[in-house]
Length: 318
Image 1 (tube, rainbow, N blue to C red):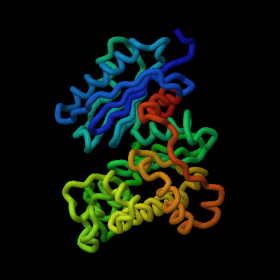
Image 2: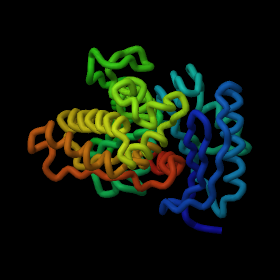
Image 3: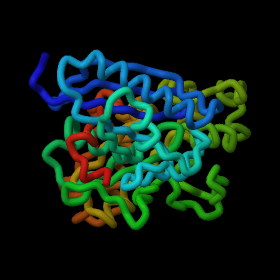
Image 4: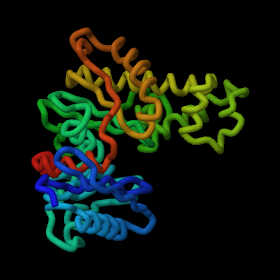
């Protein structure tokens, strides 16, 4: 048995649900991965989540204080309802209450947008420790963001703050999946890189990417970039310029002391995003908004660990 307080963190993704049993120190004591299977519907996913939580609680060497859940989409932390999550096919799903009523024993449950939970995890365990004003950017299939202002998460009027993926930076640009044109996400994300390859492939017919355009994934683009492929270089530079513009916009509005880059694609090309994106950022802001600002890769090892931080910061999910 341990006297250290424990929590369970849950991160809901489009393909998998990640769960972690986490000590107050940030140590991960156990983990689980379960399929999300969005096609089966929200009730089936809630069943999966509750089973995973019950399993980890049964393995816990001490008292579990509660559960923190990070979920993509428009999430209301006060009610625990996911109003809209396109990758999950969810509309007005009572995530908090639905999980609580399925658990074998009573546990408090807190819910937040996944990027907010990740930012809180960085503040508690990772690269934002000791900071008061931080921007977290998750570069993955899409582009998400979160802001910590004066040590607190910025939520906004209806918990929709920091939807940076849908900043319109190129009004006549590519059509985004949201219906707008020129969103940041359609340039700097997995979806954005693939869209860039399709757009620019005719100008680079000798590129290995152009020759198998229907077969490639994001990882192929990163690997091609590392080996000097000109099409990949064009697309990655376009993404980095967009990222730098997102950072400069955030810096002009919120004056953070640190940017933290996470997400699968964020980690896959972290050095490039920090160097090239940082170069663009510094060129687009006044000295007062860039002096002393650092750009770092996320250090929290799991998205589920970040979600567990909600248990120790319950006011950030209310």
